[in-house]
Image 1 (spheres, rainbow, N blue to C red):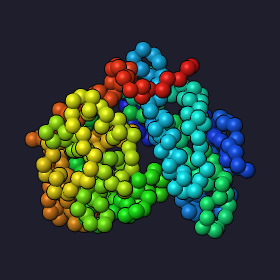
Image 2: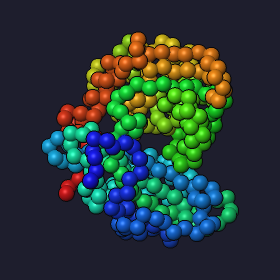
Image 3: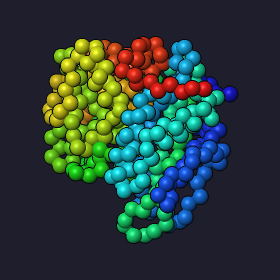
Image 4: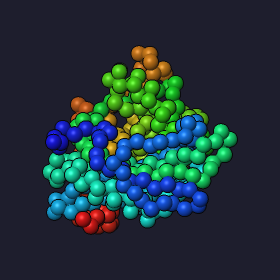
Length: 344
């Protein structure tokens, strides 16, 4: 029996995974399997060269009982973009959504009921399986869709947390893969996150790697700041195009705010009334303060930016969060048609 009240954000064994195999120029029909494992050749490209990308979005049981996936078309398009970057065959949007719907339907008992603030996280995964050692892509891959019931990524909803800018760690190289949702991009953040968490920080905020003059993004999500009723978020070739950030920019406009997507100088951090991270898992993570450390592992802090007098969650972040989650849970009108409803 699942305790919907205490759900965190973690891998959870559901009933089925949905799988399709691209080989000989075509995707195989989607199949559901209760076997939670893959059998791979030891020389499979994914194991040697990290030829893998993924997506993440949520499905909600809404107030009226309907089941809605939130903006899956945007995630489908972003996976196509990532796949092309890696030279992998691209699952088309129709297949992406078909398999995602099938995953939800076959794991419906794991979809949290309305009223708990919880949802079902959908994780589409694409990876290369052809056995070879040459450094060239090969048109053979597995596309799998899995899911898990989730609550808050950090254990609480809309809770402010501390972040640190590590002077000796970079997230993405200039003209590199930072704007694509590749598995390898996240692997390099594990150790810095472990160090930061041990010091009491929840998030890592990275600056642009070439000059360290501009805000890039958090290790797990995009950055935005609030000032003078304006939503400000970085525009950079190294930043992942977040579906949540895109949604929040539209919501901000709907609420009468000005929106700026542009280069954000490091020094501008001192001028924001509120600062936060945004992404599928968290929606919004308000930031209480951001410390700057020349070396992450050492205690020296050269600067600190603080938001809110007591680290409380700012009013604009609260308003944005309630608006977007209101749409997701069917409590507010979906004027933009973001909810993709599943016929059960």
